[in-house]
Length: 313
Image (cartoon, rainbow, N blue to C red; front, side, top):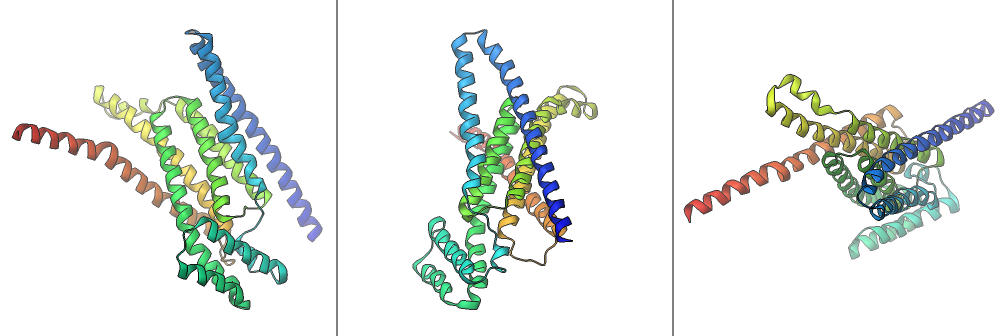
């Protein structure tokens, strides 16, 4: 029975690697094709501008995609769930690692520092106490990183009108976010889980490039005629592209976080998926609300305030 199970896992891993490689090639070819198209246009102005553009693309790809993609694999494989199954020296080793990681990545008060070090002396209760404390202190740090990244993805892909920028932005932001999550936690998911996360990022990257080519803004004027309809179409299409990309980023980040921080062994994969969707939509709602406040309400309010002050003076 276990032999068949192991063979099934190997087959799954092989197909995951094949799919990952195929998507990586597709993303690379799409980026190269779009970059060459832009480079040729820039070359019409001057060949130095074209070369500078290619160099810039190369730096972004190496620093924003390759480095964070490879860097994740240097972190040790672990999750809070595994701490429940660890015993002896392995349990003590991971408890110490969690404490050290908290000290390095989170601002702790003197009382909290004493408290968390004291957990190491509690024998049977050490893992439960540490898991609760680690989750309570690390989760806000992760949520801050996730929120900031999703907001950047929303703004970049909503404002950008070029598939190259969208794809580079999506890939760089999400690979960097996975790496940052593993840095904050101090450990990473297993190889199969990491590859599945990277598959999601590559699929999201292709989606971001394809959304830019779809001309969603042409659909809005069908319902609203005239120049207003066209204007609404452009704004709505940009917002829709940004929202879709931000949501996929939030979903990927939520899955990564649950891989590492979910210590509740009773939760099924279906329950975890539902939980990640709920978390993603809630954060996206806040991003859209803040974006509307910053980009629309505040400028309009400031405009009328200035007008009122000018009139009074």
